[in-house]
Amino acid sequence: MPSPLAPQVETAQAHWEHFPHQADMGVRGLGPTKESAFEQAAVAVTAVIANPEAVRPVEVVSFSCEAPDDELLLVDWLNALIFEMATRKMLFARFAIQIHDHHLEATAWGEPVDVVRHQPAVEVKGATYTALSVTQEPDGRWVAQCVVDV
Image (tube, rainbow, N blue to C red):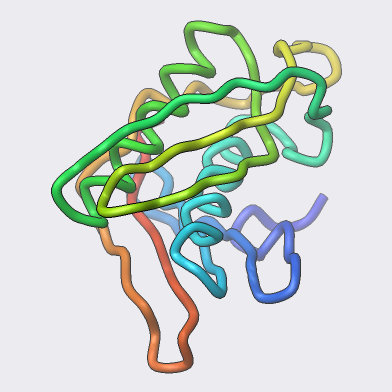
């Protein structure tokens, strides 16, 4: 099994990674667009719980959120995702996001949790403001990150 701190999924320039933070876990999404960085941050949240590659895209859920700036939008997006996972008892591993004026429209593909197949490690309780950042690097790549409470 690969190290939990190494990038797990890479598509073109988009990928996700974890970073250590005391008893919690940092999630980071990187991509050529802000949307792809938010999508990869969501995959990183799923990867805290289970291997995203084991999650089949058999059910589709759409939802939206809004916030006054990019950082708060990232927290609201991840918390909306965590809420959907908890209330629907599902895992999601594929996402499509559109962001317009700090309004986010998301589609998530996943499936109900299968304890034997997914082997969930922890429950993510929520995204926090700790290490919260949404930035565009000088090379044009976007980075969206925060710490999630586990």
